[in-house]
Length: 248
Image (cartoon, rainbow, N blue to C red; front, side, top):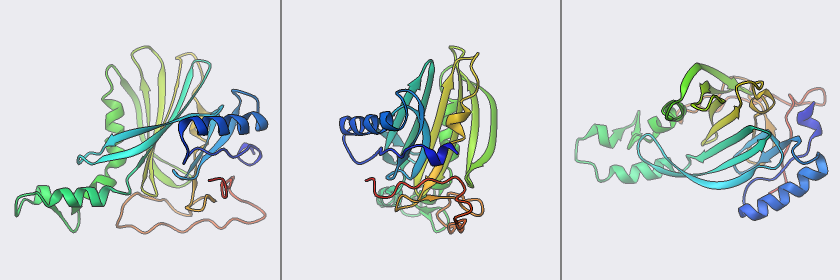
C-alpha cells in the first residue's frame, strides 16, 4: 500500500524556508521530484499524499461567530493541477468568544450564549465550522456547485463538494473537523483531466503523539460528544495508517 511504503514528511513547527528545505530533501530521497508521496503534519494531525513537497504558509481565518483564528496552508502543484489543505486551529475558540461575550448587554442571549451553545456561542461555532467552510467555498465568485454531500474519511465526518470554476477547472473539496482543527482539502484540475482521487482519498489522521489512527465509529466535531474508540491495530492490519512519531 502506498500509505505504508512512502516516507513521512515534516510539515510544521519551522519557518517556511526551513520546512521547504527539509521536506524537499526527504521527498527526493523517497521519490523523485513531483512524484506522489505521503506527507505528515504532526501539529495539524493529518497525513496526505502530495505531488512533491508542499509549501507551508501561515494564514488567518474568521469563524462564523467572528473569532480570528490562525492556521496553515499546505499547497503543491503537479502539471496543471493544484492541491491544497488548509488547517485552522480552533483550540482558542472558547477563550476568544467567552472573553468577547463579557461585553454583551445583560440578558442578550443572542450575544452571550448559554450552556447549550457555549458562552459567546463557541460550541455552535465548532459545530457549524464545516458548514461555514462549505458555504465560503460556494460563495466564491462565479463558482457553480455540481455536487454536495455528507461523507467521512477514516470515520471522521465531513462534507464533500464538487465545484466548477469560471475558468472551466473543477475543484473537488472535502471538509472535516478533527481534534480542534478544521481541515479544508481542495484538489483543482482542468476540465479534461481525471478527478484528483490520489489526493482526495489519501487523507488520514494522527493523534497527539503522531501515531496514525482510525476510529471505530463516526467521529463528529461536537465539543459535547466524546471521541469514539479507536480501531486496535495489530500485526495483521494497521488499516493503512502510517506513523509520524518522533519527527517534530
